[in-house]
Image (cartoon, rainbow, N blue to C red; front, side):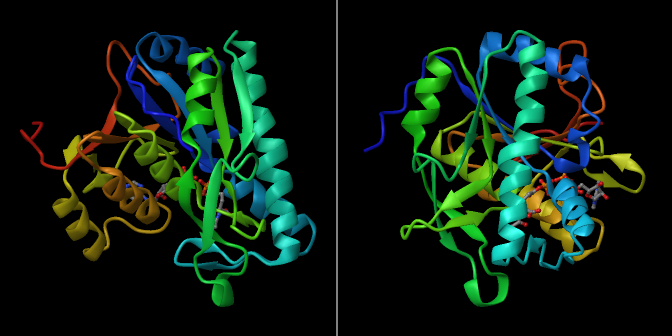
Length: 265
Ligand SMILES: Nc1ncnc2c1ncn2[C@@H]1O[C@H](COP(=O)(O)OP(=O)(O)O)[C@@H](O)[C@H]1O
Ligand SMILES: CC(=O)N[C@@H](CCC(=O)OP(=O)(O)O)C(=O)O
């Protein structure tokens, strides 16, 4: 049973990329105070580089297929430790230092993220979100807490699975009928010909991918962004974690909209 979506404040989902988490500043976390005045905020975090680093220290080689980490039983243990332990605690501690009330959640707990296998034969314990327990997240936010979700899921059979954080954030944003989805990463937006694109559309993104301008970790990000766009979620942004989230009175980065109303000059 899911709670009815309540629209007392719009929801914003913020995905913190593993590429940036180690470098996020106190100023960055402080800027959540501004967001919380207008939105119910929810964080979904990655941690890919930290997983790769710990696997390396254990002499386990990482292997990716189309941006998804091949996850054996042994790898899964490390993924759970890093995402559900280290990285989640790092973010909740930083928010708590700013007098924000974070609550760390693993997607595999309390049926928060029910998942199915992406391709068990090729990828092992890698999941995709089938259902989000939205009432748990709403109840936390309504009570004044900021949920910080580690992208782990549970299958119907109770197996924990590793979920790409971009895909998890998009699925959660969709299920929560979020108004905004932000991807915080280590670049100031989608870059083309040395310039940050201010606003773009799914059509333009498809051509940037096929032309090779968008590659690597940016591909699951923009694909997740496009999949999340809906009548509720009209805008996805890719922003840098180098600065505070809001600079002046706006966010800087690339805005992805279903249709680009006017081309920014
Ligand atoms: N057109 C592009 N503009 C900006 N970054 C891009 C582009 N294409 C690929 N990238 C790469 O995407 C990276 C961000 O994705 P990723 O490393 O997966 O970050 P995260 O850990 O935040 O999810 C950038 O550091 C950059 O190397
Ligand atoms: C299945 C899969 O690939 N899971 C990711 C989960 C972490 C993640 O997505 O972190 P970033 O956002 O930092 O890339 C992984 O194991 O790296």
